[in-house]
Amino acid sequence: AGSGYYTVRLAKQVGPNGRVYATDIQPEMIVFLQRRLERERIENVELVQATETNPRLPEGRFDLILMVDVYHELSRPQEVLRKLRTALKPDGRLVLIEFRKESAWVPIREEHKMSVKEARMELEAEGYRFDRVIDVLPWQHILVFRP
Image 1 (cartoon, rainbow, N blue to C red):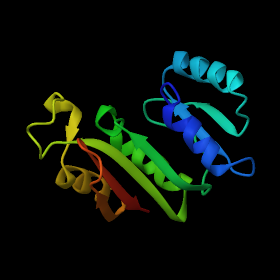
Image 2: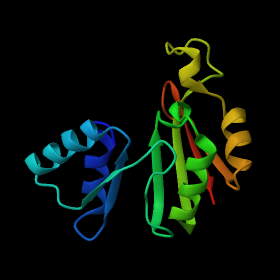
Image 3: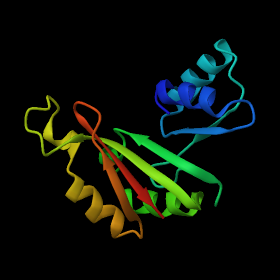
Image 4: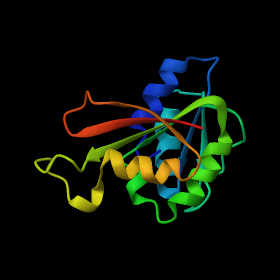
């Protein structure tokens, strides 16, 4: 969830009949985002206090799970990936946005980058099917996977 940059935009896109779940492992970020949502009068967001191994999302409910510059930070990614896969609908998508490791000129420390090859290896090992890469961002890959 972080500061809510994507949460707010997604909540507006899905409209009043849609629902956005925003998870974070830091309680302070949940509180911060709750205040922001109240201030901006956004009511279609469910805040979820996650753990390092469990996003605590309901099973089979999600069309899209978006992780922006998060995956590489996970301490136990395989456990999280298993939980996320159960949360997706059969035709859902897990989308990772990660800084490109293939591009040495991207001004981000190496440990905060991922290559397409690395992402595919890790996610396919957990039962995800690689769908595509969308390379429209200047420094990051948009990596789309399916359960």
